[in-house]
Length: 352
Image 1 (tube, helix red, strand yellow):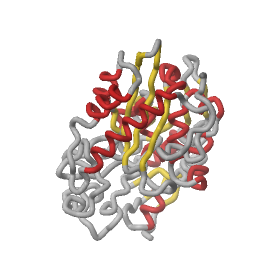
Image 2 (cartoon, one colour; image 1 turned 180 degrees about the horizontal axis):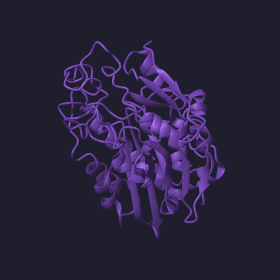
Image 3 (tube, one colour; image 1 turned 90 degrees about the horizontal axis):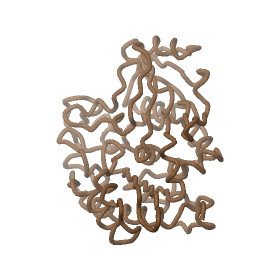
Image 4 (cartoon, one colour; image 1 turned 60 degrees about the vertical axis):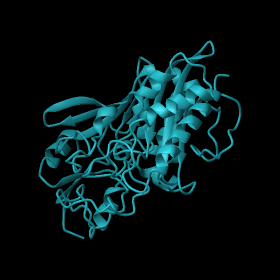
C-alpha cells in the first residue's frame, strides 16, 4: 500500500479545498475505491473523507413531486424508502438488484454514479489499459471481451459502465448537482458520463476537486410509476454485474403509449438512453410488435467490439421483455429477486 494523506473536513467547502490538491480522491463508503487502492489500480496521494459531511444524507421531497437525494444517502436506505419506491419503482428495483445486501447498506448514491468499470484488464496492472494509463493501449481488444461494449465504444476503450442505479435515472431525466471551487452547477445525468473516444481516462464531466452533492429526479418522472420496471440479465442471479439491462417506463392512456422512457445498461461506457426507441413507441399499442420495433431502434447503431456480437441480440430481447413487464404494470411488491427476468411477479399491478 502506498502512503497517502488522510483528511476529514467538516464542511463541503473544506472538502473541495482539500481535494483541489492534485492526486486527491474523495472517500465515502469506499466500496470501490478501497478495492482499487488495494489492487494497485489507483494510488491517490490524499484521501478526503466526506462520509460525515452534514446535509448530504437526506432524501428530500420536492414541491413538483420529485425528489432530491443527498450524495451520502445509502443505496439500501433509498431503495426501501416507502415514498421513493412508490414514486420511482424502477429506480428502487435497480438499486436492489446491485451488489449484495451488505454492500447496499454502506454504498452511497454518489459512489454508485462514480464507480469504475469492471473490465478485467482495467483491474490488472500487468495489462495495457488506456483508461488506467493513457496511451498504453487496450488489451481488451483481442482479449477476453465477451462482456464489453456494443455501443459508443472506440479503438481506445471498449469497457462498460457497471451501474444499475444509473440506468433508470438516465431514463427519468435525473440531474446531478455538483459543487466546486467555482460554485455549484447542475448536469443532466445523461451528459454526466463520457464516452471513451480518444480519452477514456476522462469518465465524467467532473473537474478536479468537484464534489457530487445530490441527485435530483423531477416530478415529471412520477406519472410513469404505474408502468416502470428494471430488468437485468447476469451470469448468476446474485452478486453479479449486468451482461445487459434495461429500464422501461411507460405512460399508457386509453390503450396506447402516450410517453415512453428507455435506457440500457451493460452495453456502453455510460448508461445508454434509447431516444429513438422512445419515439417509436409513442402512439403505439403496448404489444409485442411495437416492442420489437423499439428494440430494433434501440440497438440500430450497435456493433461488436470483439467476441460479443451475442450481446446485441441479447439486449434486443431484454428491451422487449422490459417493455412487456412494464406494460403489464408495476407490481405492488418487488419480486424476491429484483430485476431478474426469471422472477415471478408478486401481487397485482400498482394503481390497478
